Structure formats: structure tokens, C-alpha cells
Length: 199
Image 1 (spheres, one colour):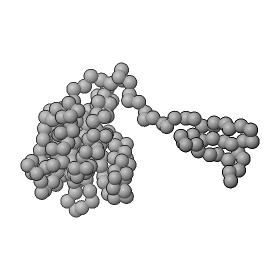
Image 2: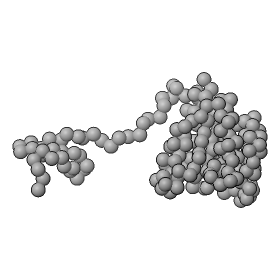
Image 3: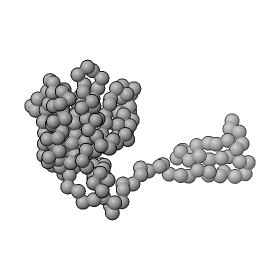
């Protein structure tokens, strides 16, 4: 038996308080909606060109499923890919390829080499180059990954930031990870990111 004055949920999820003669709705707030996108007047008219770099010692352009997935997602968002390469897990090779991509691209997605194995060195290569780091990117990526893979998401060292006004994202190399990062984080925010990075 419910006590008088105790909160109850009705069949619509509304919290109600039951009093002797009054059924008072004390909370009819709708489910919280996502924060709206930044107002259009705050966005700069930026033309986005993307670069996709896959870091792997086992894949090539024919077998690079994750790199192809990123390119398909960018194409679906009408973002042209101007640079694509598959390179080995070597710090100098990664840095050289990023600078090469920066010649034609302002959005560079590096996938692979972000884990904890002895040859994973993407973060070590890129982090010192970042002029501004976007801590929220890695935090959001791991939060979203947790819903899919649980606590294993803590092993990801995904990171992002800017170099000379260009955005660089380092993400894990699995197809699921690149889909999550590109579709739900990078594509929706890239104009916002570049608008701020080039003010």
C-alpha cells in the first residue's frame, strides 16, 4: 500500500504525488531534448576537404575496410576526400603523412594505432603536433563506445585537436569504431570545429 504523499509514476512516466484529496502533478517536464546545433550565424562558410590516413602494418588499400568506411561516410555527408593513404605504425611516417594531407585537407582522420600494444604509436606521433587539443572528443568517443563494448572502451586513446587551423582526429581502426566516430562526432561537428579554429 502506498503511503500518502509518496511519489508515484503514472503510465506515462509522469511523477505524481498522492494526497488525501488532491492528485497533484509535480513533474510534467518532457524528456530532455538534445541541445540544438549552434546557430547558423555562428558558423563560417568553410569548404571542408578531408584526408583519411590508416595506420597499419597488416592492411593495404585493397583490404582497408575501415578506411573505405570513413570515405563512404564522408561522401554521404558530401565531404570530398582529397587524400588517402595506408602507412605503417611508425611515428615519423605518421607525422609526414599528416603534413602531406594538410596541403589539401582541413579535416584529417587518422585511424588505427591508438591502443596499448607495443607498436601502437599514433597518439605518440600526433599529440605533440596539436596546437589545441579537444579533450571532449576522446571523452565523448569513450562514452559512446561504452554503450557498445563496455569497460573495454577505456583502452581507447582516441584524441583530436587542431594544427594550423586544421582538425585532426585519431581514432581506433575497427570498422565499428570509425563508424561511431565519423558518423556521430566528426561529421556533425566539423563545420563548428573549423569555424572556431579559423577565427
